[in-house]
Length: 295
Ligand code: DHB
Ligand code: FE
Figure 1 (spheres, rainbow, N blue to C red):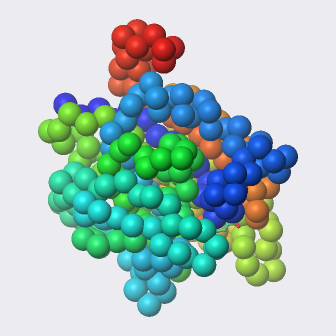
Figure 2: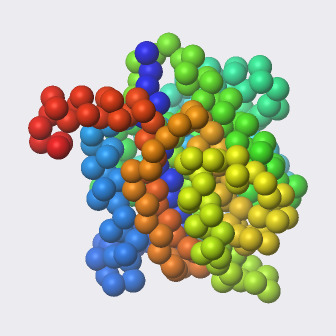
């Protein structure tokens, strides 16, 4: 049976991609952010996932304001990244897992989510940069299922709806008959605002509330309306919706493996977290025993 091992949660600021492509990871500005990643990579080495279900928001590369699905699921075997105007060279994107995508789509529709299904999909920096951080210098050794949430054009889905979406994805993963080792990723956030009078706004107190509760009590993050979340986290800080959905897909009980929080990266309070499931704790320990080099 497939195993859901855990989740990697990270900010996805485009400038991080620029730092990777310039080789600037050890410069004083960047080092505190990149220092978050060796423990994440070590966890990934031990868990050896072969599928990433990626919850993120598209920023205008695949969906523009004229056509904006609330929730969209990729159903392709091939995805590509493209120039978004940030001065980044496109990152390599691993293959899709169309069969698993369709199982997730079937479950979401059965659970009455009116999603958009995309058999062609460009994936933007919110998917490509987290993969490049997790598996630097190579195409990620996984297949992906991209799931986008509209965090861009109001009205946005509520945090409660995003958590329910994630939980429905979790049901699809639990019922999937393959033997894949699956992780989720939730990207974006934490607090940031790129435009308007509050440009540059960040809120460490709300970010800490999110990081403290996401694992043990994700429902706590659904107490705020979208407008309260914009107030608390900034117009783009609502990307925490992607984290909430990804957390929902992990099942009821998770434990925190690592957490890093650093202000600022560009205009963003940058955070990186890993949670694992009980399945990961068991199977990671078993793998470490069999493969002492990973210990
Ligand atoms: C920034 C952050 C984002 O999440 C994004 O998608 C684009 C830019 C920033 O802080 O520069
Ligand atoms: Fe973003």
